[in-house]
Length: 343
Image (cartoon, rainbow, N blue to C red; front, side, top):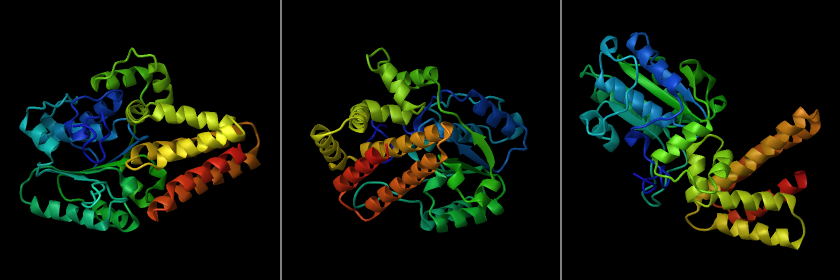
């Protein structure tokens, strides 16, 4: 299924439906062999940047376990799920009684995902375990991602992680493990996934049906930083044009640049532009952090600290703007001006 579903980008396949994973053979082998040993951890923290396959790996591992419920007789490798199997169909449709996918709920009024996973959502975990307590089957919870848990929800998850039910498994996804509660991290086995290399990116995008012989392929691969979701934003949401305009604004000056800034802000502030606005937000804060790292490597610690602080300020201003529904165009113009001043 493509971008019609909240949280799934245009051109993507929902992780529960994806039969292929590229670029993480060592992680797959580790999970399969850990499970087969019968000594696997009850909670695995799958870490890594957004869009590199963490959720696909989680569903792939869940499929493996539910198809092979006895660890000692399970294969020592994860196989591609069979889309026609009962387990795969149940996982893809969200109808499995043995798996709960915990993610941001959809707002019925707007059709968009809400801003956080709340404690009400976490209460579904308790009900899930209660309803399946007598089955003897594996019960798997995928938290996707744990970064979206608000404080109360995070504390509620922590209590369950401290006393997990028998034959339960938590697959906890995170884009930024440092932002999670240390107590949650301490109760999970970390599994770090790296951004995809160019060959894995080519395979993943070809699997999604994209022509990998076009003139912009190398630019897309370079700009995506090993993330399939970033590549999809560059290809299907005008991200490549946004990135070019952003760079032109940073190096330009005078009235022409002001016009470019207003044009870019109009595009990003337009209705139904959430995906590309999020792309721009990451582009903006990422640029500041890169400048901070460059300054630190050059020995200019004072400038590095100022830029790092500016990155945090930008992230906070974007969050406040979204939370209070402030004028997005003015927010964008203000951030661009501040970045040009700092540069």
